[in-house]
Image (tube, rainbow over all chains, first blue to last red; front, side, top):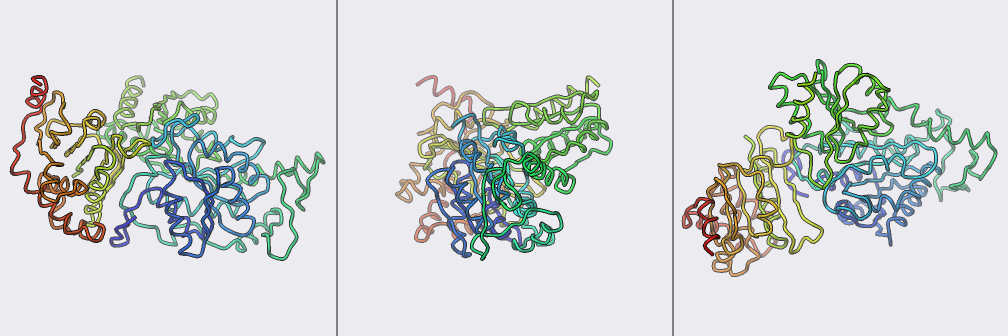
Length: 377
Length: 192
């Protein structure tokens, strides 16, 4: 990390996440190193003690997630980072954070899977695991920033959303974003989501009939459990109470989906072809669109910054407005499946550009798909 | 204008550092700079490369597509990373480490970089600075004084002087080794 020049810095994606977390007030990191996410831990092991925070390397990924939940329940703004294999291990405790409504932020710098898979090479094949990796009905917030400024601002927003909705928030980037060092200007306070202590969110919770929430060691006796529980935090099997508590877990996020949603739309106004993407392929998509536009092809880009909750209504409208949708992604069609679901059998051509194997999708591949679709229109 | 640069070799040669310093110099000049390393899980000994992009305008696609400059210090790295070359790419190899370049339209500077490093600054650890000198002389994007400033500011304490010696050795070496066509180099391999 180096080179502050006129407010512009030259940081890698993983460093950006670490620095943005500190800006958001993160004062605890519990983790276990795994490539390509390790620089987040390395950076915070240096920086957290400088700002009075705590860094702990646990014995494994499961314990790391447990440490994060414990710290958050003690009042800390807590973060952990991992990659595919570690993300799998964390799932049980992510469910515990969902059920116990514990705010925390989890970063997955994606690499190829399954299993140990492809270390230090990019993939986007954990995006469904972010949604459904832990068992049971629930909702989750999952952010997919791309450009350095977005990585910064979305990390800050992740902490805000986690406190706002008392939920784990997952940031999904990939090896390319994590390891690419780039010049950018750090956003000012006014460009960022609120940065507030937990007490600030209590008022919001009261307004929304959220469950009462008190940190450990603040003078109140509290009870936390992963069992279905009443508003007082004690286990229950009463069907109406269990049903209502699960509805609460899902609806607190799904009802606010429009407030949480963030997308980047580029040249869509007159587009007859839309390229829908998230994360790294978004830059290849833009390069391809710029080239296609030069040849007079009406194509635009729709890029998701919030993958979960999925922007179903917006994508449905998009599908209505265009004749064809191209979905480039570094997996076998996870986003394409969601677009198809949102499209609800509408008459639109849906084409995937899929690349596994650890090398990024190039602009030319997307351009080829655009040209082929255009010929068929 | 977009400039695409790649330093490749095996882990431990300092190629990643060379790329980092080029990108940092561009950043400090107020240009948009982007740098991304590629390495396997075994960083030491495995093929590595660092890609650097420099542009006055916004950098949209963050990976290389048309290389302006490619410097390679290992045969296995050549096999991995000698891609995205265009006919006018400036290519530099150490002929003691890269022996089989295959056919292609490029002109190649064949400079014994490790040997020069050992002769001029004794320790091969300064290879990255020699590479930087060669890069700076051949590609007109980072002025010599900007590169020197980055070396002075970022070299570990006690190594600045040696790094600068190495940088100048690289710079000077360019005038001693004329470029040869890739096909000619490929033919030499056939004879061996």
